[in-house]
Image (cartoon, rainbow, N blue to C red; front, side):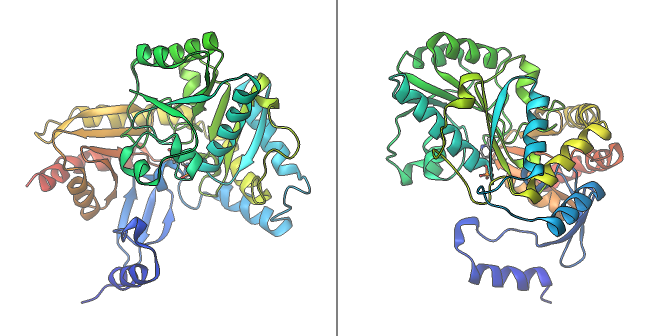
Amino acid sequence: MSTRTEALSERFETAFMPNYGVPPVAIARGEGSVVWDVDGRRYLDLIGGIAVTSLGHGHPALVEAVSRQVAVLAHTSNLFLHEPEVLLAERLIGLLGGPAKVFLANSGTEANEAALKLAIKYGRAHGRSYFVAAEMGFHGRTLGALSLTGKASIRDQFGPFPIDVRFVPYGDADALKNAVTGDCAAVFLEPTQGEAGVVPPPDGYFAAAREICSSAGALLVADEIQSAIGRTGHWFAHQAEGVLPDVLTLAKGLGGGMPIGACIGFGEAGTIFEKGDHGSTFGGNPVSCAAALAVLDTIEREGLLEHVEAVGRRLADGIAAISHPLLKGVRGRGLWLAAVLTSARAGQVQAAAQEAGFLVNAVQPDAVRLAPPLVVTEAEVSSFLDAFPAILEAADV
Ligand SMILES: *Cc1c(COP(=O)(O)O)cnc(C)c1O
């Protein structure tokens, strides 16, 4: 018997370029941290559209903000300004607690493109010609962001790139120090590497990076596209390190599902772009800004930073307490975790979890990423922990 999922998958395969393959679940709707597929099967969503749906699905505050804004004013272009973008920029600056200036884009990649152009301009002004980024780091798929991305499998076939980027092993402060000379314009780093498998660096690495960049005169660009907006139990992951970057990029969780990205420059980095240097027709559109404001307000009003801390600990401790030959351990912080496997069976774990009614992500061959909505409940997390040993067992045959 052919299901709706099968029928839709066949049409997807026919109509779309094969760059994504055919995704395994056709989602029809969602509510909170639960989604239903087109055949009515229910799943607990423990990946949240890759750390994006911070308020879960259909949160009344997001629905209200987006509906109201789209009815009043959906788009202006950058030829005109509007209040939601001003409120959002002010709000972000307030959360960051320092003098800063904001550029709004539509995605993470675009936020990084802005950061890269800004860093190129900074480099030319100061006679600095190259960039440093981390092996296995992910900064996006457009050519500028891809040139900073340290994963050979997605990078190499599209190179060489016109930008000189030197890669260092992530987490190795000595290697970073050696790589960052007076000719280096900027260092691009994730505070924890997301696509590499939620890999935190050793304690003190980010502070060391700050120190290395400051003494060499290079900009430190923190790519917090995945790590910010409450994901780790802090507004921004760098705040936990007590480190302020020169440039910060945001996206994913900021819009709660609406597309938005931000590139934020502190101090001098906020004034590098001059009139005409950069732009985006859709960037900072009123609807996405209204969504982001609703996300920030709701995180505050519902005390979600504390909630993420508590539920994230419950989830991490619960995984750590499971003894199974396929499970090596757990890493990450807040509601941004990876269950690390003893062998390359993450795909099988993802499939077994799906079969059991849980959406998780095989982010690496041996790592299963969990990045649920920030509103996921203790009870929902417990239901996954109860099911996880059997999921591992089903994946280990
Ligand atoms: C997802 C991600 C990006 C790219 O963002 P898009 O919105 O997919 O363009 C860049 N950097 C990091 C760290 C990411 O996690």
